[in-house]
Length: 297
Image (cartoon, rainbow, N blue to C red):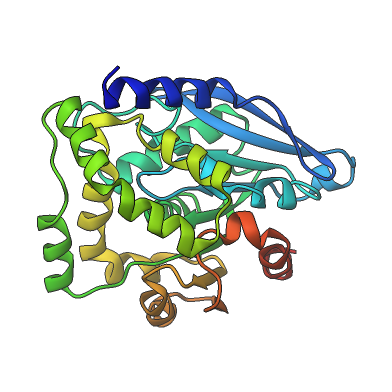
């Protein structure tokens, strides 16, 4: 059996094992909702307490090329006292995606359609949390739907010079076939493993996130293309967000960028966690939950 065949077998078992999970007081279920690309996959944590269900729901948007799985224990943590909906970006995880390279506006429009098909809107608002690419999607959703989006949490805001942005685009890997994609993945696996060790993410948690990130195959960089293009107009778009914004800065490689983005927003609040990396969604969910609740509630 080739390396690729073994990898696909492992990934298949991984995806099949993703059943219902239980938080302290919440049950996480998975579902699909219609949008322009087909079906949008999401995880939903619903609190057991009736009063908690009355709080504004929290919608999460992940980074490229991961899926909603990367929010880990933060989903059940926040799901203890509100509904949480963690969406797979179109083309990632279990969500159908575009045939061509999309824009951040395309992503925003698709998830907006999905949320409205779930019943959310002007009369049923949501709070949002976006990580990296998801932060850009969240910014655009907040601008497009000022009455639907009540508050926004942005984790990792990529504010960079034009030189840095163009260099990042030029370094994106390109794959024409699935074989080329898996060759790239095999060559970069040791680097990904070092990232896992640095973040202190659990072995199984990390494995699930990485396996799920393989599903886009040759379209894996679509999200990076969209995000890196969007970064060129971030300074123009961010001031258009009228809602309160919590900038949650982690030691994620772009922490300083997140800190520097604060003056761009009309109503910013900063929560800085220089000792926490992205694995904090698994390892420090209660700590993050304190800051989130302080802002959202």
